[in-house]
Length: 80
Image (cartoon, rainbow, N blue to C red; front, side):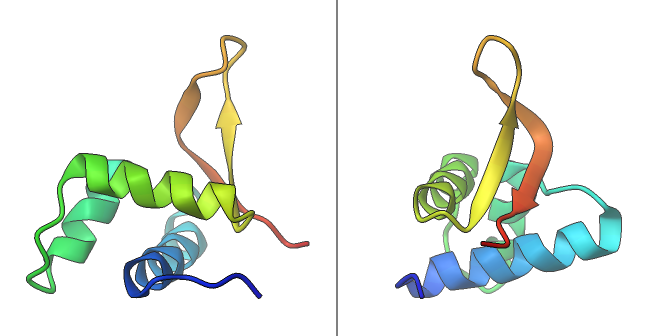
């Protein structure tokens, strides 16, 4: 299993439940706002950093456009 920080684990759990409830991934801002509810100081770029960390660890996958830019809300959970 991948070793996650507490924030990464919380972000991953939120992303999974968000996709289950809404059918698409959250934006970096939505992720940051969720984490900030616990009194943690989290900004949009922190949400983006967590998404990138989870992607590097192979837990999530972002869909890219033909130019290689991430498409907002196009996050999926890796099942392998």
